[in-house]
Image (tube, rainbow over all chains, first blue to last red; front, side, top):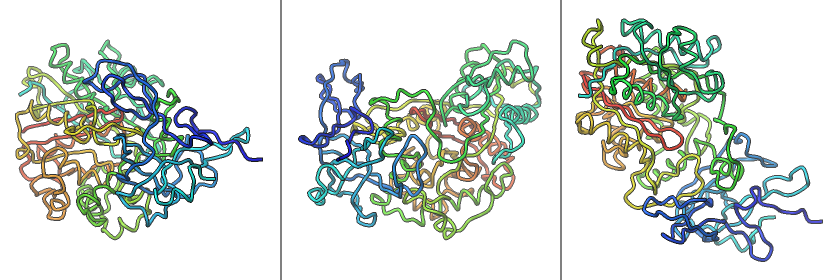
Length: 151
Length: 396
């Protein structure tokens, strides 16, 4: 039987067999500013309104920078089978800059300016046997072979 | 000039403290500052403490109260301020304001900290929800503090062809300066090869290119014009002080954020740039007037980027400045003659106070072995979590 896959922080992103992986942000209906993570208030000082709606952010983006973490981070980070991994800063095509794990790319092949696409990555199996997933970015030209959700 | 003076500066050697508690460290630094000012506790009518979240302060951040109860309980106003790594600068600004308002005459500013080992962990009390960036960065990707700076460094290599050797040279300069500073923790000079052979923590930053955590304390005594005039000790006048928070759209991917909406025209690390502009404007000094800059070097990248960000040199010029010894003690702009955080380690609430202590010693010509020749204008710059920027300008 296939293990249930659930976002490690429910509501931060969507993980759905039919519609795929989506980062959930917010858009101000007055000034059109986009936010990730979602927000209760429009933070743009030029906008005095707080009329926000939940939106899906762009799926693709360009790698602004990256690092490779060679030491295991402290709690609250939890991952089964930890090993050094890459984290990227991605300029999404809708203008929001987000950070996220870069997966499925050999460290030496990572380049600033790479086109990347959103996917999901298993972190750990929790006490209820549920596979907790995080969002992650994959090299765009490799996306087809990974699918939207890495197994 | 501001009419506010620094009469005394004191610090204890930084490192891993095995004997003294946080309170004992604070008292040792304050006593050193009082001795330096040729004053005693009875002269003090205000205490401002940079509040630690790790130890002391009765668990409520009441470090100033704990200090006066230990030493001099006679009704002195106690103020405890937050500001994370910039808390010392916020405490300095608070003491400055207390004296400028006329409510106090002589105020102690103290930062003392015993840090937990390793990566600075997440504190309790967060919202732990989908609007809480600090929660999200740990749970979704384990994004550590130095990794934020590593991504800045990696981008700098791409933008300006900064080399790994430049990032090593920055550490070499800090260690060279620290070699003659008895309060510094790491005083052994290092070679570029040693820096680059140290373990890779978060690419491209090696262990020796990231400031460790330390235990340390530093204190200052500030006073009014009137008080300074009748004091035995010659004072250094505060020329300018500024604190600021961030500006919306800042291009820095600021700890602990996971997402940002960038705006053109907003300076990188805007909280520090704004604070420095305020301090320089109050002091009436231009970049070319500054002889000594004590800035937060959490990593080697900071030493290349911050003087550019603060307007001392053009973007991308930092490598050339460093390589051509322009940041040396006798260079155009002496950078961290103390040895910086890379040589002291980070004791979060104490470090901004220590920066100002070093400026006092430099301007008095007392920085034996690391003295900047004829230092007349000194400036500090520090950044703290929550987008806290702080800066102080002192003039001889």
